[in-house]
Amino acid sequence: MRAFVALGLNDLRNITRDSLLLFMLAMPWLLVILARTLVPLLTVWLTDKYNFDLTLYYPLLVSFFFVLQMPVLFGLIIGFVILDERDDGVLAALQVTPVSLPGYLSYRISGAVFLTFIHVLLTTPLTGLSPALSFLDLTPAALLSSLFATILALLLAIFAGNKVEGLALMKALGGILIIGPLGAYFVSPNWELLFGILPSYWPVKVFWSTNKGHSMLPYLLGGIVYLSSLLFLLLRLFRKRTDH
Image 1 (tube, rainbow, N blue to C red):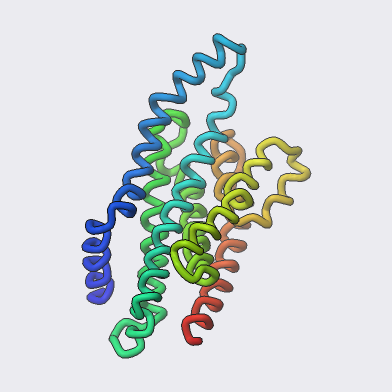
Image 2 (image 1 turned 90 degrees about the horizontal axis):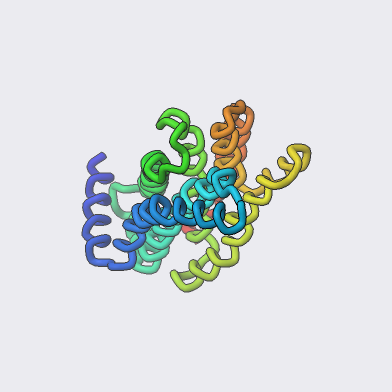
């Protein structure tokens, strides 16, 4: 716990000195403001101009901008922090400190999980686009979003050599992992599970099921098993790369 506190204080100092990280931390709340102001105006305009009811697609909008974007945002932040600390020799220095590599990874993963979980839980109701859902209703989707964030962070830490490569990797993965699962919203239920190979499918599917009042338990359990398995695999790959 003492090591976690020390790492946390060091992170706070680094964040206050990095304008990009400060902006990224403010982004969820900017998205909330945009959702509360622009989406209602757009809804009225589409109804008057084209007789198109945008409210039918509110769950899709919320899932894209909050259930998916929150883990992407915090996965990116944590992934960048790991890349910086690897380049600065911090991971190598851990070998001669009381903080082991597993302890360091536990701290970083806990950060990604906590930040994503809290932001999904808080920002989604504030949009006003899913007023019927309580914190309890949103908890399963927030949990799976948190696991998805850790997967993204580890993907960056394993396969990117620096921040530039990390951004390029995120752009390459973005279309698949963020846009890809949204296709499940428009296909027949018989074909939906084909999107399950994407780790980002499970949190949005749980959110959609909850929003419609359907049972989300099979998707919650499936998501936990699948995402936890991916996380375990990525942790092993990260440790192998760090050892080398």
